[in-house]
View 1 (cartoon, rainbow, N blue to C red):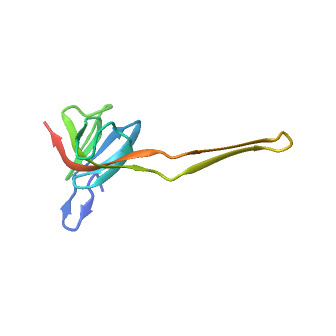
View 2: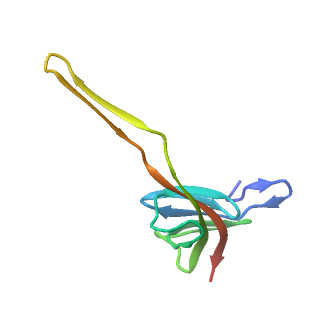
View 3: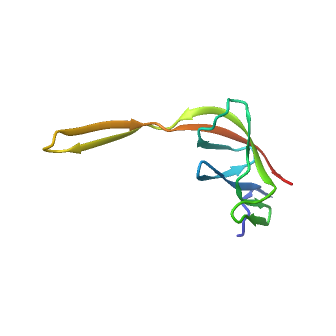
Length: 116
């Protein structure tokens, strides 16, 4: 099976990138949702922490990152994730604490995966 993903009769080029301590699969033309980045909609963002690059039957794995490989993306929009409600309750002590959290994300469109 190797490192290739077949769609129809062609293979797909993809990279595993790291952003915000998390890993994402970046496919050319696809969308990835990362933690909020300090960029406006329409700005170019360069992701240089590429951990793996798969192109046809060739798979390159970094130790820990690949040198000379970067992923060019464009910021589409900023979104918010689902609301998470945290409720701490301790009976017989009259402790009731309700807090919530809503994570902010940046939606990126992968333009190209470039190698030098």
